[in-house]
Image (cartoon, rainbow, N blue to C red; front, top):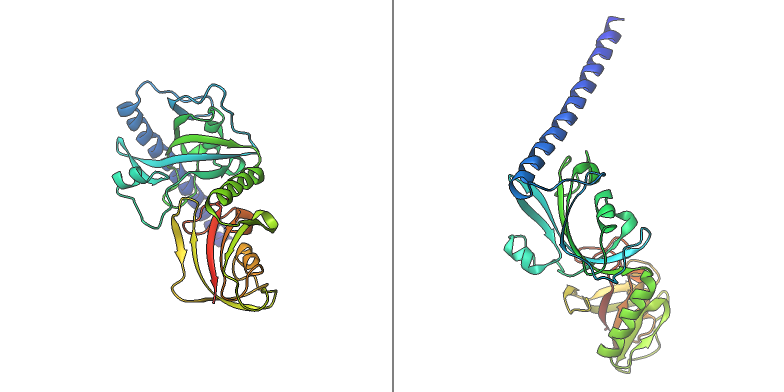
Length: 296
């Protein structure tokens, strides 16, 4: 009985200590935020949800507003509060990255697509205030960000500062990508042909034998890049692909089915046939990618 009592007492003390620690974290966050605001935005007050909003540029008068179940094309810079200043840790702008000492040659600095419903609450609330063409700065307390959970560079109970440029509201992602891909193929590829699943392909050379089919193993050299010519990957040695095994992205396998040995193909791949909603490395979620593939 005494052992049970001691166990229960210890558990109560542990829970009390945890609660106290969480309270301390929240108090420390508020202290940092108050100091930062006093030094930088002394007259700024939050809205009813606790979000601080600083319009840097109003959107176009006839610009669209983001849809709660839609997508947006944005540029952004993310920072955390450091003393009374900002510590930038992520950005889509190469100059901002260089000025803040966070530039990496492996990162593709370009606008990205966000699915609005997947964003933290503070960004959902912030985007709801914007129109296309607008540039807003949001100071997002942790209760509207990641709360008591660590998220990469963002530690629990951290206020996040986001400067967001809303380039475009995308109501239909498939149509938006189809238009981009079609225009790129028309202006940048020779004899481009539309193939299944929204892809375009241009093939050089007559090749040998028949076109590849499921089950064939093909040795390939490749270069992967974006529409702005940024190269995200390049083969250093031949990559063997057995069509149908699913060990490479669907778009890569699909391109091989239109090729013969000795041919080189340039293929544009929408996100649903590439790296989807997750991305990989320099490839962001929903990115359109291009591969130049040689079957050797």
